[in-house]
Length: 131
Image (cartoon, rainbow, N blue to C red; front, side, top):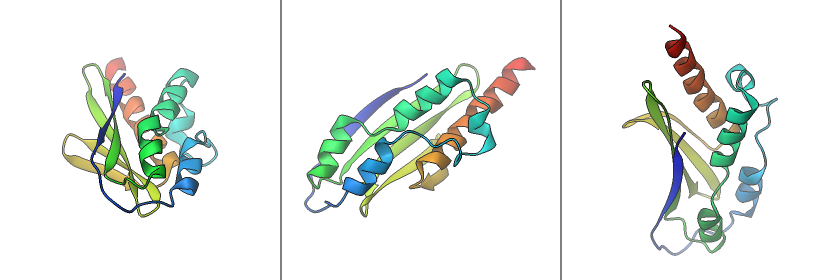
């Protein structure tokens, strides 16, 4: 199902990411996600939650004030397609971008919305496979 990587560059400034990191490292709140996420199996839910949690490299960089870094998670379903989730620090928050190739599907600071968007992808893939 996809892997994670971090890319880095150096800039000055940033800081103030402790609250954002605290929120990002908490688990996904199923009461705040949409119906799509709640329909998934527990193993897929765990996979989404683990991959949306910031990597150690991203956490360390944001704590030091380096905002020119991002986590990338690419998830795919064989024969259906792929989605890419990019997490990066922006203005004291962690911003998530969900992409399908070059098209941006969602850009938000809400981890639960991202989880639901990825869940929609998995559910659509399951429907296609069943046909």
